[in-house]
Length: 321
Image: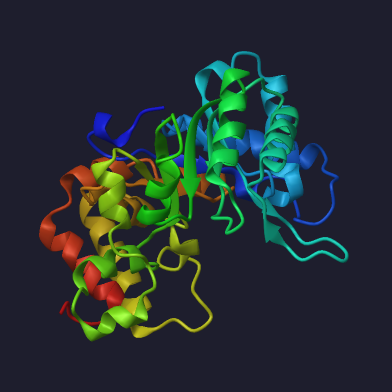
């Protein structure tokens, strides 16, 4: 896996949560496999090589349909990297959803993912969410066993703060290479926290200050899920758009026209412009919308400071402190 210190900018990642049909049930058919194949082809067509999964996505069906495509496409596995997550147990009758990073659970869930994906290994395993009952030494033992067996090549986390990552890393013999967080022009707590130190408005953001800085200093790739903001600014109008939403959509459209690219490319380019070299995770299953993201790295490289700040100030709906 390429780390942040080895790349000039982030990279586009394809998130497979939208594949596999409904969340309920375990059945899928040819239509869901065809949808997955089309999404994979579209993602690879814009240079994506890392595909992001989790054992819970669509109750396992996201991995299953992807595995069907892999099995039916000789040579595809060698051209891509696979990433999956474990650590969340969904609700079931009589048991509420909860987190589980016990050794037995990690081994069970990773083996299940490999079976569904029809592969012998994943390139990266992410610990999906912090588990308050987690024993770091136990997690390290599970990860060490999986790596020794050749089933996992690298380790990352998701939804964790810099302090939580440092706590885990102190017990691990292998480096944590990625942290996946919700980051976008709309979900800006990761960014607002960096400028609202010693400011009353900081109380409105719960994002742990210093997390971005910790990841950058340790060479940990920041992967941004929700990076397209669910289409809020690029076609999927929210039920009650704020004046800031409307103004941001208009500014994105204007910049896209000026640059000869799509609004999606500008939206992701804004995220990738940040010196943390953020890697957006594309969650759409629509091939056309995936293709619309192709120019994001180029937009990031060419975006001016004035354009970058202009988008931020417009989206926040108020001046910077």
